[in-house]
Image (cartoon, rainbow, N blue to C red; front, side, top):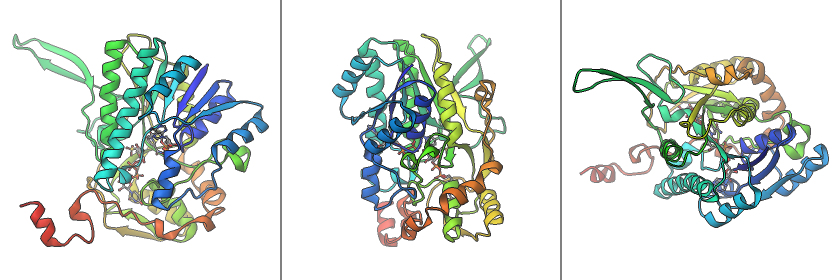
Length: 403
Ligand code: NAD
Ligand code: USQ
């Protein structure tokens, strides 16, 4: 299969590109390297020494004998180049990772909110419009998030995308339907993924596009069998307050001796998946596309749920790290339960990598090995969800804003 991977230089996109190439697909990576530019903006970087794209691709060719091609295109801005690429390459599938993916980054300022919405919504709409304009029957697999659902339910398991409902008509007849699960985003970033969902539903209905939306939980871990082949293929590891996600941050903090930064009570429960399983799920999703005319296929791409304070305590026990309960810079429920279905991937044969099996290796093989590259000043999460939470805004100004 020929596959275009949008966002193929990123944390999920790079190992996925290598895996798809390894199992025999013809892979073209598209990326505008915006994530590397954001590293420059934030003066933060990957804990692991990631190589430039040219070196990555040369190393892969040398080791595997396989060719991955690279195109530097801004998918959100350069529609003409994107369309020309689809016409030239005629791919069977597109995997779409090319979005600004950090919730704290999306909340830093009005500029960051606007950038995240412009980038993510335009990127998705451009891809969909280009598939239609190309006249090709390309399967689009998009990386969405478990955060579109919010993180709580009335006690039932969150279904895979669609909610069964029953309505009573004026005549008193009871009618059963399935609707998109109501969205409840917790950040501007998560909100863009709920907008993506509507774009997918519309294009699947109107243009009969074949679309899979993968509602992924928090990805942890760093390397996959392919990125482990050579240090030049190493994957990125974000630990800073904006891009570092909770479990990888705790692993890195344990390795450098920084008290684990639990936000608030740590009662937040979230869904998780290991990076090795991410790449397998994408492979499975590409092998099992929806039919033309079918509604968007939504799969929950997560394997375990955990409460943040339980993760901190577990890592504390494993490594001796201290746990620090810090003020929560976000606006989110202090405590929540989370139960979600993930039968679709299990039925397709996914064998989850468990936290138990992988945690310690991650600390010793990655976090400790590269700990000298860490910049401790970049660890605290400073992006706040509301102006009230922001340090340094005088009380009088806050009051005026609400007058
Ligand atoms: P990442 O930031 O490491 O990678 C995204 C890549 O897309 C980057 O290389 C970036 O340069 C590129 N990109 C962004 N905008 C682009 C544009 N307009 N044109 C071309 N390239 C562009 O993020 P990631 O962690 O690899 O996440 C990939 C996708 O998976 C995102 O859509 C994210 O929402 C989703 N996801 C990630 C996680 C996670 O824990 N990392 C969890 C759930 C879902
Ligand atoms: N948290 C801490 N301490 C930290 C960092 C985070 O307690 O040092 C808490 C947060 O307050 C939050 C939870 O951990 O309650 C998760 O935060 P996160 O940064 O690990 O994850 P999140 O912001 O939700 O975003 C990440 C990815 C995003 C993806 C999402 C999947 O960056 O791309 O969509 O996970 S999900 O969480 O299922 O919505």
